[in-house]
Amino acid sequence: MPDTVPWICLEMTRLMLGRTLERICKAVLLLCLVHFLIMMILYFDVYSQRFDIFSRFNGRNFSRTHHYYYNLSRPNGTFASYLATGDHFLHSARPETNITPTAKPLPPCPEVPPGLVGRLLIEFSSAMTLERVQKENPNVTEGGKYTPPDCRAKQKVAIIIPFRHRDHHLKYWLHYLHPILRRQKIDYGIYIINQLGEDTFNRAKLLNIGYTEALKDAEYDCFIFSDVDLIPMDDRNLYHCYDQPRHFAIAMDKFGFRLPYAGYFGGVSGLSRNQFLKINGFPNEYWGWGGEDDDIYNRITLNGMKVSRPDVRIGRYRMIKHERDKHNEPNPQRFNKIQNTKVTMKRDGINSLQYRLVQVTKYPLYTNVSVEIGKPPPRPPRG
Ligand SMILES: *[C@@H]1O[C@H](CO)[C@@H](O)[C@H](O)[C@H]1NC(C)=O
Ligand SMILES: *[C@@H]1O[C@H](CO)[C@@H](O)[C@H](O)[C@H]1NC(C)=O
Ligand SMILES: *[C@@H]1O[C@H](CO)[C@@H](O)[C@H](O)[C@H]1NC(C)=O
Ligand SMILES: *[C@@H]1O[C@H](CO)[C@@H](O)[C@H](O)[C@H]1NC(C)=O
Ligand SMILES: *[C@@H]1O[C@H](CO)[C@@H](O)[C@H](O)[C@H]1NC(C)=O
Image 1 (cartoon, protein in one colour):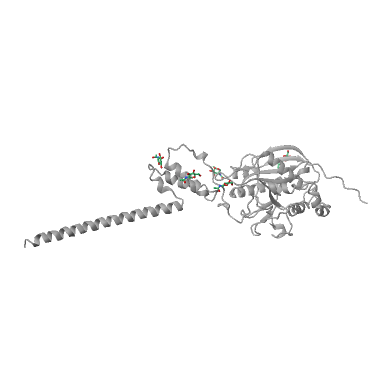
Image 2: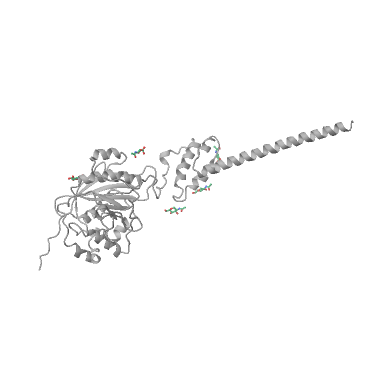
């Protein structure tokens, strides 16, 4: 008997030790599991760009993670959203830093702006006033300028509108275009080039003037030339410049939403500063309606460039109906002139532009540039 008692004691001790070991093992396992879970949460948090988990550890030193996010955001633009959220995290986790939110660099604007809505309903029957348009666009600054508040646009875009006596159309144009351009995250300014007097209209010359005057105002990279009566029906038709000269208005309602002919370049087009200079700007000698857009098309192809266009479903436009303007009759010489672009483009263009600047007025929604551009030379006598 005395032998069995210590044996039982030994057995019991072993048993207890076993249980304790088992408990320790369980505890270690549990700890491992918790550790693993925390790691998983941290891991997924990084990738879902939510940093709230970190801000719960406010007092702790996370400078290693800071550098990690900071450097992730560096490679040119590919991690734009990291920069924004990462900086936000930096401020919330380290309130002692004296970096102010206003000093933080903006991320580049996304290639595809997130707030676009696609196809738009465009109509011209509701009453329109400049006061209303102004109320709808409180963030457009004097002269019709706008800069995206939350990102840095790659290009600065001047929108040039050749103009005379079309105040009614201009209201609709501003009403529709300002919100579209804002959604597209374009950094832009609007320039109305107003031909004074009642002599024959000269669209292309006004566009050359728009290019020149806009550059006096700011360092623009891109120039979009738009008629005042053309409204895009889809905001995915992005108003910036492309690798090749751009034709935007490829499917107008008045042409049955089709390109009227393959070389059509009218209505709304866009060239970068380099593309514009490469073709010596636009011709100054097309007075009256028509031909100048074909001459511009010729200039582009003769200089080894191609016209780029949006998808036909996206490049749709509505035109505000109107009578043909007075003093803008079809130009009878237009067919002859476009045969000679190759010769004329070297001497007739931005390098030969002459006009008289009369007045520049900055309105809340646009800049009005009023100019005198002369009149067509007298026709050579026949025979
Ligand atoms: C955080 O750690 C870094 C080194 O990684 C150190 O230089 C810094 O002083 C620390 N900050 C605090 C608030 O402890
Ligand atoms: C982050 O990038 C900067 C330069 O962009 C470099 O000086 C720094 O050492 C990098 N930090 C880390 C933790 O890699
Ligand atoms: C970022 O882009 C600039 C010019 O756009 C270039 O000079 C620089 O080398 C680029 N940096 C990296 C890390 O790619
Ligand atoms: C104008 O800008 C302010 C500050 O950036 C912003 O809060 C507001 O929503 C903007 N308004 C419109 C109509 O975009
Ligand atoms: C532009 O200014 C001229 C005067 O310089 C004025 O006659 C014309 O009505 C203005 N046009 C617009 C659209 O503001």
